[in-house]
Length: 430
Image (cartoon, rainbow, N blue to C red; front, side, top):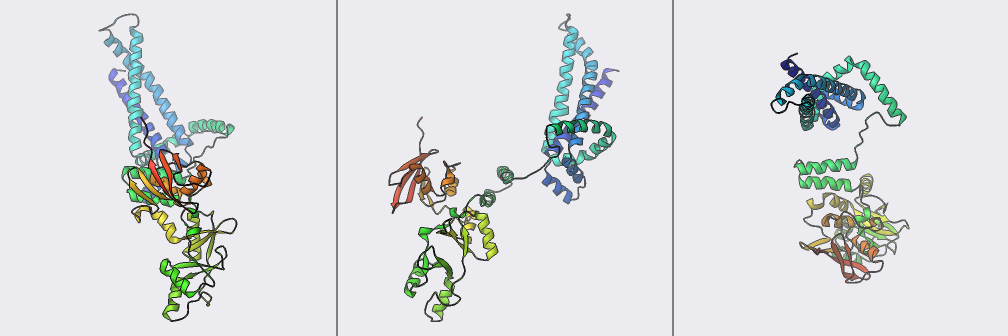
């Protein structure tokens, strides 16, 4: 054959190899969600691609048969086609005993470079730009090859499956999407500009609900305002005036003996009808929702939905009241900065310092200060708990802890309780 005929055959082989390369990377990189979307839009070939992804063994067998056969033919024909040409060109600069070997080496390098560039590297990079579109374009020719080369496919597949079975390796692809996968996709969407920063934060908060317990968003025990069964009308009025909440827990003498809750609208109705204010009247007390302190925020939200109540009393393992949480508390965690311009418990003084309330949930501190983790953080839930855990004592003013480039210093103590911390960035010495 002439040099021109050899070149035509090499070009044809490169084209065939490029087809197999694009097909391989397109099927591997195609996302099932996107393929299902194409199918719902009327692209029937997407269904065939999905079927191949479920059982990719035969597909990859065809690809490897095609790539290896083309590579072998390309090497044989390339050596025969270009070696004489390179020998003639080398004669202008060298005509020694190694001339034939040099010509053969240059021929191999030239053909290999052509296949790497035009049959492998460039087609795969193009396929990665739009894998789903490429996959639906090549799926029917691939299915035709599967029929034509079925005996070879069966032979190689059987051998491969036998080896996998010996080593207990699964032969089918399993796509299990985890929350981490979704968060990773959201991060990529935010970086690409598909998701706005606020949308990204909202979705991140939703997934965070399953990791945070109700104690991270509750009103703690020492901040609860409650009534006792024998509360006087004057005391009830005073508490409502000073703390205008919608609902109040009602207890039998002590906070840990919760008997119900009262809606302030019912008390208002008593005032409007000029009746004496009393918590013992029929219909005033309502049954409260009681939940354990081990529930996640997502589970608490499900409890609110099931009970039709928008607040709950939280008990620990000893049946002691540790706090109270409302539906608003849960939703404020979800909405985050979308509804609050700044963290209520974290006040930024300047670029390098913050005032933080002791009862601030650890997750909020981690988010604001961009801290990845605290040491042994499963042992405490608030920044005050972190200080006590690290100091190994009841803190006093000026006590401090250094962690991840920040200095956490106690600045206010209220009856042995850490009321406020000053957090400052520690400047690194050069």
